[in-house]
Image (cartoon, rainbow, N blue to C red; front, top):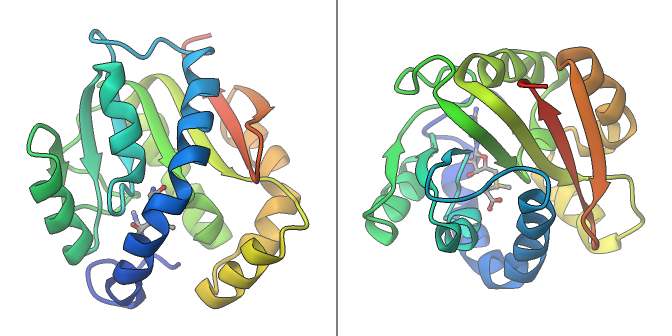
Length: 198
Ligand SMILES: C[S@@+](CC[C@H](N)C(=O)[O-])C[C@H]1O[C@@H](n2cnc3c(N)ncnc32)[C@H](O)[C@@H]1O
C-alpha cells in the first residue's frame, strides 16, 4: 500500500477484499469487543472508520449504534460501501487528507488492517491527520508479530511494509501519541489504543 489513491492496486484488490470479508468477520467482532471494553461505543459516540474497504468493520460496528463516518479512497470500494450502508456518511478521501472530517470531531477513530501497509513516511502523515480529527481515542487494529503463514503470504502479495511494521509498531505509536496501550485481541490482531483525552 502506498499513498496512491483512487486508481492503483487497491482497485484490483477489491474482489480479494470481498472474498476475505466473511473470513474476517469473527476476528473483527472479537477486536471490536476488546475495543468496546476500553472506550464507549454507543449512540452518543461519533466514530470514524478510516480506510473502510468493503465494510467489514462497519458491519461489526453498526450494532453498537454509534454515529458513524467512513473514508475510503478506492473508487470501487467507496461506491460499494455507499450502496451497502446508506446510513453511513462515506467520503472518498485518503487517510492523510480527510478534508471532510472537521478537527477534533471524532470520539473514536478506528483504522483496521491498514496501517501496516503504509510506508514509514506516510504513516507519520496519517498519524498527524488522525490526531487532528480525533478528540477521544485512535484505535489501530492491526497485526502484531506472529508466525501465521497465511498472513505472511497475503502480505508478500500485498507488498506493503508489514514485515518491518510489526517490529516497530509499539515504539512508533508511542512516539506519535501521548498515551498508548496494546491489547492482544486473539488471533493475529492487536488493539493499539492511542488516547488523546487522557
Ligand atoms: C487491507 S484493506 C482493509 C480495509 C478495512 N479497514 C478492513 O478492515 O476490512 C486496506 C484498505 O486501505 C485502503 N487504502 C489504500 N491506500 C489508502 C490511503 N492512502 N488512505 C486511506 N485508505 C487507503 C484500501 O483501499 C483498502 O480499503
